[in-house]
Image (cartoon, rainbow, N blue to C red; front, top):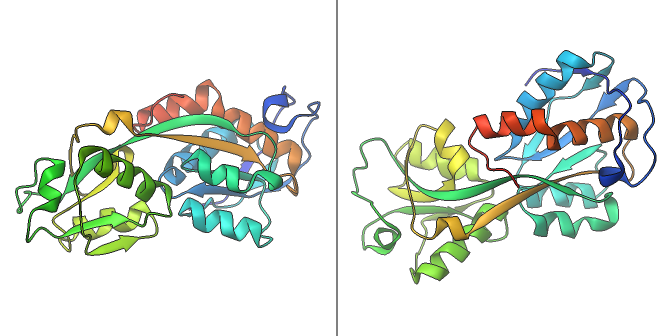
Length: 245
């Protein structure tokens, strides 16, 4: 990830920070983003940089939403947090201004190229001899996977539980697993094959973005969050497979 330079013009940001807008000063901007949305945030930052050249956006810090939330709770300094679900954002509610949902995502079955295990549906994940990898239940993609499997009445014993969706994609892509559940967006950009999962449209992750109350660069943070949640940010998200709120 490369350093970007951005400055934000004054704009209304009450929905994101609850106070009157001001012209941001120069400086560094640190964005924490869930692993599944981090590539999109990099592109949004690049687009933002083209318009505003006076604030440095450090490389986006990405990991599982729960990992990032823990870091924030332990005092990590950041300006903006984009989570893969509302539950994780609610966990850090004392640390943030009002969040805004800026994207949605759904799950798909992911299999390696060629689908050697012949996985076609959720039921196949419970088939004896099928090696399945899932996100850990405490992270958003894992919680969504659990809801989808429970609704389908499918009991799965995963071979491993990953702390972010990227770990699931990697193990499937290299053939360490026959199948797993990942976000549609990760399947699109990963070296895996996506298969529609019945009921997935009923399990939708809503991605909120918020400015930290202790943001070192609050004005630029408000502008960046507003840009990500606005028309240009959503256009980038749509190109990468995210849904609109």
